[in-house]
Image 1 (cartoon, rainbow, N blue to C red):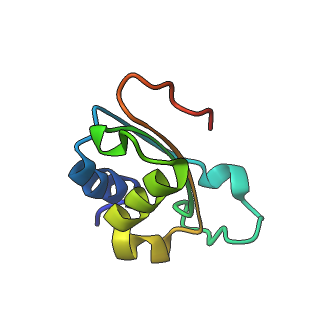
Image 2: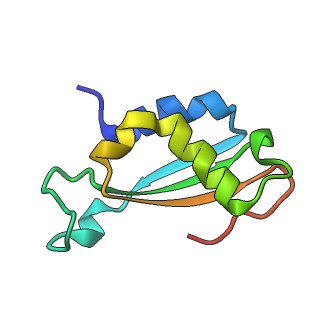
Length: 92
């Protein structure tokens, strides 16, 4: 069975990132709302892609959500740090 982390990486490859980091933050949320006990409910994604050039923060987040599609139904929380090449990644 594919982990959600691996599936996030696979789907975000569609944005042709030059940098992609998927961090599973689920353990930090144990006992909080949305933590489903699977260990795969909360994530942080850091991604750099030319697809984000000239896009607003909201447009970048929408592009990530679109690439993830129905996988978002299985994710309780997703923090996104998205940048175009040459831009600093926002802190997450």
